[in-house]
Image (tube, rainbow, N blue to C red; front, side):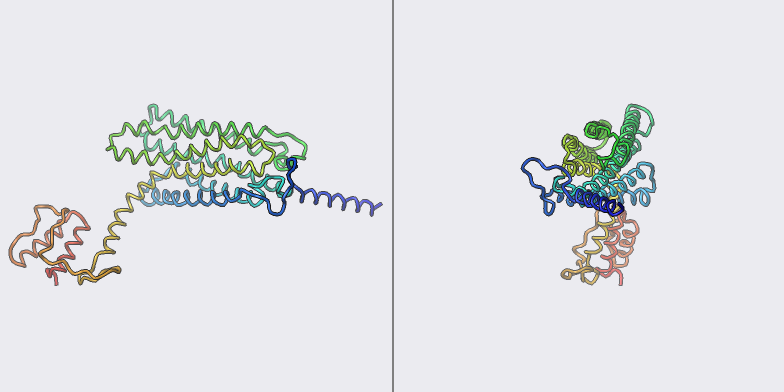
Length: 388
């Protein structure tokens, strides 16, 4: 009797193992499963995810460096942006592993055991999306409040708060539904268990549609206020260009909505990948959009210093030898010298003896209004023999 029970258990274990090694889905009529080297769209995962991280990561760190060390003024918008980026890293990591377990491959070409692991990772990816996109949008809206809602009253004030609370009221229930879409929860990745699940496709399509409306609302909100600012046209165009980065966020959310109509297909490993990739693009561009004003402040702070350093790097030494490569340059002759525009006219060089001229030159050095011009005067004094 014991031997018979052991044999039965071994037979059941062998059957279960064979089932796990078999196709994850019944193939269409006339299609033969290819479990060894199936056609795949996984390359888009390996292209899209590194781009999303490579684009968003530097801008987030530039934003943090700017608000903490340059502007020395940081707040909840900056914390939300950094946290959204952390969720994006988790999202991309989870999605990368879905590709390792059959993402982008037709499910009948993926062993059932790998499909179960894919379903777990896909659910993790979906759970990470809601807090990531909410925090990215919260960062943008809090930035709007800092820029356009200084009075704390008016239409802009109320619109910003309406959008914040509307997004919270949407994404929190969606996060809850993503976690508990099936009872028991294990039925998300093992549909053979007894229980029930919500209509995931309907929830996904509704979420994608609301997401599009939310993205366009956030994009259009600052346009009216910017158009009313008393700025030169070029400055207005520059400010609008900063917020125009959010246009790709809207495009990504539209594409996510379009491809979400295929999420009801039983071929999950193949049809869940496109909306997840567009979600990654939406997340990265939303984070990037929120970092643009801080990035502009960083560039304005750094670019004059870079230009000054570069000019010092290329300028020849007083004996005509270049400081950093290139052919030697002869010292400027005294007759070729011209006063830089940055000098004050009241301190132009007086005519007279060398001694008197040197005094005038020293006055020019001390009253030069531009640091770069002051250094050029110092070098000219050395080149022309005023200082020995």
